Amino acid sequence: MSDKPIKTDVLIIGASASGLMCAIEAGKRGRRVVVLDHANRAGKKILMSGGGRCNFTNMDIDAVNFISHNPHFCKSALSRYTQWDFIALVNAHGIPYHERDLGKLFCDDSAKDILNMLLEECSKAKVKILLNCEIKTVEKNPDELFQIHSSSGDFHTGSLVIATGGLSIPKMCASPFGYKIAEQFGHKIWSTSPGLVPFTLQPHDKVKLEVLAGVSVECLVSNERIRFKENILFTHRGLSGPAILQISSYWKPGETITINLLPELSVVDLLSSKRKQQPQIKLKTVLAEVLPKRLLPVLLDAGIIELPLQNLSREKINMVADKLQQWQIKPNATEGYRTAEVTLGGVDCDQLSSKTMESKLTPGLYFIGEVIDVTGWLGGYNFQWAWSSGWCAGQVV
Ligand SMILES: Cc1cc2nc3c(=O)[nH]c(=O)nc-3n(C[C@H](O)[C@H](O)[C@H](O)COP(=O)(O)OP(=O)(O)OC[C@H]3O[C@@H](n4cnc5c(N)ncnc54)[C@H](O)[C@@H]3O)c2cc1C
Image (tube, rainbow, N blue to C red; front, side, top):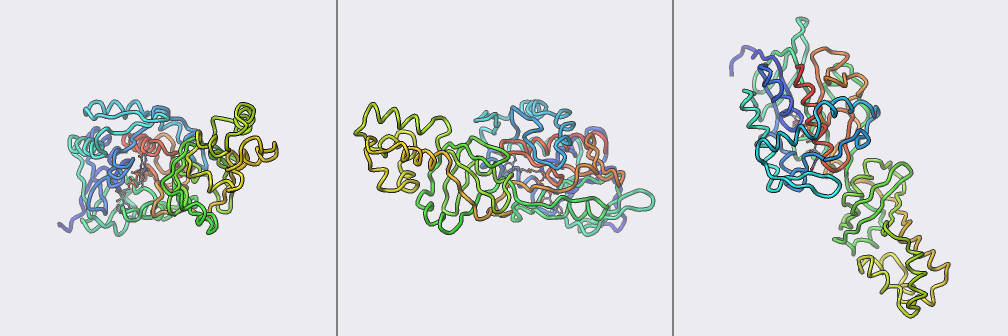
């Protein structure tokens, strides 16, 4: 390692989704780009994403699919580098993929395909990636250059891009580095919390529901602000599955969520008409046709599920309908950053340019990806935000 600082045009901290995309674009413009990362491998979160198949974008991207204190901020970047642009890149690399429910696009084979594509593009654009690199200090010189002191040497750069993501999955090298740099340069940080994360349950619910571990049901899960119709999954620790992960990003401690286990039908209508047609049939037999059998004795009293429909009063039918379609549950907490897919909050959008991601306070400083206060829903939205914001910065750094 030489003692002389290495001069570069663009220095990006974070070699994952947003950082690599920015590096490719800047490199293609002929800029000298260096990417530093403290991990021993680039793109670790890409590799673990989408159950190893990387849900790399969604067919239906809209600002409503993102959470931010400034809901308009994401619009410009998402419209300048769209899902179609990323899909074209994936196609150009011949990566096989498929569409799942709600427009989610996944690799057929492996998330490695996406990472290899980005690394290949980086190498074409002559981007230099240095791993296992500890960033010690970041300063801005009076001569307007940023000075980065790191375990891989000192760097001087005109453009510094922070692409260090959020706090989720510390084991995958997540760190608060980006927030600290933002604060150092006078930026406001919206308080952070885990998003897209399973719920743990109050002790009495945990005891009652843990026998259901492994059961998955399509539900409508809602709170006062939003609703999601996707599967929920009962686990040994609590509640998970896409609908739960989605609502977790809109949940505040102490709040109750409402679960409709049969969003496609009216339980009152079903039971009333069955009672007319087959009065002798037992409640559990009717419900087992529309719900996993294991759920019934857990959610409904043993005395009731054994009753023939003719013995079910209107009042009891309403009560059963309420339990199945208005099931109120107050989570104890979330599983936290250990298992969260994303981090809510982060660098305040209002102090960044929505077109370039450049700081309005410190020229030459950029924030991209998850470190910004923009959090996508489950379904490929977070990667699309990483690609779009990274691409935008890559055009100007
Ligand atoms: C289990 C899991 C599954 C997911 N699946 C999906 C999915 O299928 N689809 C989807 O859209 N989103 C998914 N996400 C979310 C998605 O991975 C992130 O939103 C996205 O990776 C954010 O990209 P980023 O570049 O901003 O940050 P990251 O991908 O988090 O990258 C940050 C980089 O910065 C580096 N870094 C951090 N701190 C420092 C430091 N102090 N010094 C140097 N380097 C540092 C890290 O090592 C890392 O390489 C998933 C997340 C998880 C955890």
